[in-house]
Image (cartoon, rainbow, N blue to C red; front, top):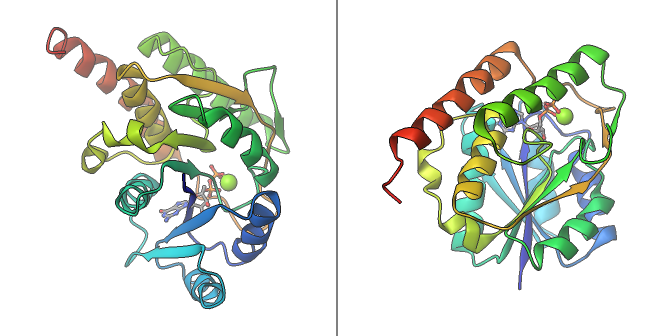
Length: 239
Ligand SMILES: Nc1nc2c(ncn2[C@@H]2O[C@H](COP(=O)(O)OP(=O)(O)O)[C@@H](O)[C@H]2O)c(=O)[nH]1
Ligand SMILES: [Mg+2]
């Protein structure tokens, strides 16, 4: 049963090779797929360099910064096509601790989606400004109240999917990015009555490189939860 970690990158040259090593120190069986959006800092060239000596590393190179959501969807589609049974996602900036992949792996053996959660036992975020933490915290309450989806951390990006669970979704239909994309994926998987489990993780703000977070990402997510809710009401009875 093959496993692959999908990592979207935009200017992560300072992090990406170190991250490969850290992942393989945890488990040498993981394949890794980088989805790079033409990073001006040469991230893709570094990855390609490593690929010449390591056949567990793969890359999808896109022409420009096309957004996080479509990057994930292209990565997931590639992983499905290449017969990976378990598909993981994580950020390139070490905010997600590669060591936690071991626990995600244990849990995905008997679940369809496992979410690395910052809010399942208190608040586990290190070095975020209070404003960003409050935003994330309230975004999750807002999402839970509107959608009734029983997930404490619906906006995080450290997860494992069973490929069979992703095959039930139409990955080409996803247009959202950022927080919204994570919420939409969780929601659509949840609606298929999948087995979802949250496990506690500690999220640490990036040390190297810069964040691509923006106000638009927040507005997009705020609007999306209503779209999901209304979409579900309108499709009621069709299932
Ligand atoms: N391929 C791709 N990756 C992106 C894009 N925007 C962000 N990323 C990557 O997505 C991950 C999360 O982004 P990050 O800037 O760390 O967001 P933050 O942690 O919310 O501040 C990192 O690995 C980024 O390099 C994008 O437009 N395309
Ligand atoms: Mg980050």
